[in-house]
Image 1 (spheres, helix red, strand yellow):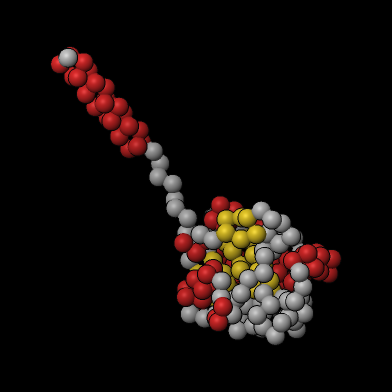
Image 2: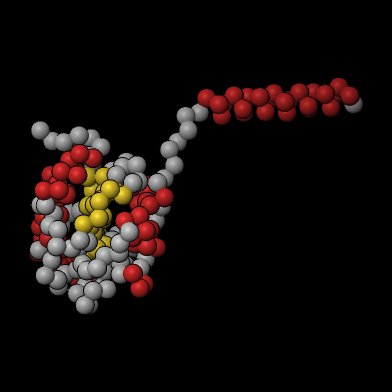
Length: 195
């Protein structure tokens, strides 16, 4: 009986030692930046996408969009930014919102068709969200807390580094070709700039 117990104890101790040694040799995985720990449906798709799983390690330009706004032509500039810098790690993330003067009244299918057919948008677009302070989605509450400001209108832009730091908040009138915005993007691309 003593022999069986001591063998069992030895097996357990051996397993524990091997387990501890294996854990000590594991490379710790970087956790998800808190600002990316949100899940949304892609526009026109029922599947949900976790921002961290899809965009961790990317430079992100988050924009609340609308189809019937004076700033809607900024879709052209946003798509140009995306196409110019996507190989270097920039991703533009569009979040339609009907919060400001009801300028995004359409269904998700209508919004998707409008973006693709009118502006050839290829950057990721997500389900409609509330971006305005009164009813802001938790993601937008987090962005506003980091930036010290909520979007005051459509096409407000937040720039998030690959490690999850917010480094820029740009009001709606700041166009995608703005020199300061573009320099900040170039300075923070995870894969360097294109030649």
